Image (cartoon, rainbow, N blue to C red; front, side, top):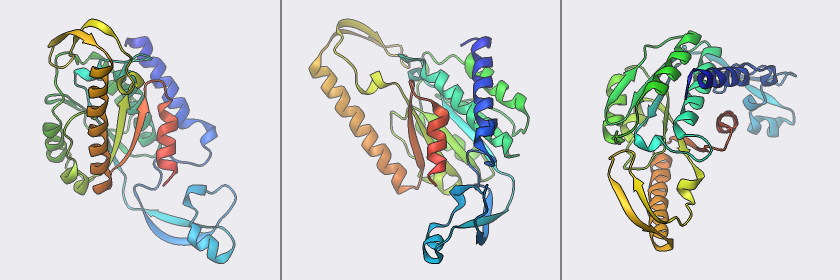
Amino acid sequence: MNNEKIKKILLKTKKQVFSEMLGNNPSLFQGEGFEFAELREYIYGDDVRKIDWKTTAKLGKPYIRVYHEERELNVVTAVMMGGSSYFGTVKQKSELMSELVATVGFSALKNGDLFTNIIFADRLYNMSRPNKKFFAIQDALTKMDAFNMLGKSSDYQAFADTLFSRIKRKSLLFVISDFVGEINFGLLSKKHDVVALIVRDRFEEEPEELGYLRVLDMESHSSFEGTIGSKELQGYKKALHENDEKLYAHFKKNGIRHTKIYTDEEPYLKLARLFGGR
C-alpha cells in the first residue's frame, strides 16, 4: 500500500461507519458495554436489534430491551501479520486486514470507546496506547503498511500468551488473521470477549492446478519446485479443511464469535451482519 491507498481506506471506512444510513445505531457493536436494565414498548426509530422477541410474541406488540451504560469499552484489534498475509488475487490479505482495523476503530470512536491496535507475527511488534482520537486509526494503518511481513512466521501460541498478559482490562478483542495453524484461545476467551475475523483469499481454498513451477513460502523463505497437480491439491485442500473444522469447533467450545471475510468481499457488510445478528 501507499499513502494514497491508506487515505482511501480511511475515507471509505469512516463514511461507512458514520453514514446517516445507519440511523440511530451508535456503532457496529452497540450494547457490548451496556447492562440490561428493563423492557419497554417499541417506539418508532428504536434499534430493531434490541427487540425482545419472546416478550413481543407473548404480549402481541413489540418490546425492546433498555440498557444502561456500565463503562466505556476497551476495543482492541490484534492483527497476525505473518508472511502468509502477503498474498491475494483481488487484493492482499494485509490490505483487507487494514480495512477491518479501520472499520472496527471508527466504530469504537463513534461509540466513545477506547481503541488499541496490536501488530504481531513471530513476536509482538507494536501495541498502541488506548485512544479515542481519529489519528489513532491512521497511525495504526500506517504502521501496518510499513510492517515487513516477509520471512516472518505466525506464532499463534505466543500470540495468545501475549494478548492474555499485555491486555490488562477486559476488552472487546478482535483477532484478525488467516488462522492457519494451531489455535488455542481458550484462556483468552475467559478474560476477554473475543471475536475472530478470518481473512482469506478464495484461491487459497479453491486453488487451480498450476503444473510445474517454483513456489516460495512467504513465512520461512523456503521454496518448492515441482508439479502442482490434482493429487497435490487434494492433499492441500484436505489439510486446510481439517484445520478449519478444528478451528470452528474450538471457537464454538469457547463461545468465540467469528466470521470469514474474503479479499473480494466488503468487510463492513460482513461485520454488520456478524453484530446485527446478535
